[in-house]
Image 1: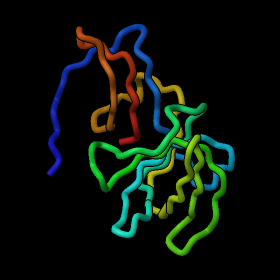
Image 2 (image 1 turned 90 degrees about the vertical axis):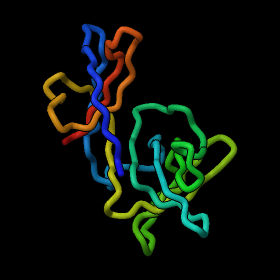
Image 3 (image 1 turned 120 degrees about the vertical axis):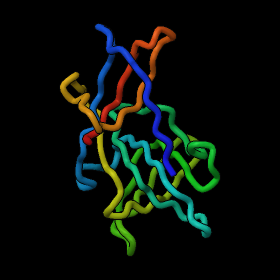
Length: 144
């Protein structure tokens, strides 16, 4: 079951808004920097459910995600992308390691672009940070 909470947040003059723009997996090329959220199978194989292309490297590495052993976050550079039996297989490299991750057709693939207040509509998922006064510092909004 998903718990949904309502919180009042003000958008200020300096609030940064970014939009999660859907893109095709084919738009991702070797050398791109990605953040990939994956599930880890019983055999240790990683399967992506969200792939996000970043404009520049951000917190490179591979680690557990959301405090769970069966989910991982890999922020790394695309070394290769090949067709595999269950989808495309990305080889991601970062200092000290490499991960191979299958990207099935149903995975969310996107990039962050500058957003606008007009994209903050009812039903649109958001992730945000705010200050102690309830003013949003940064809002990441996705299509509803």
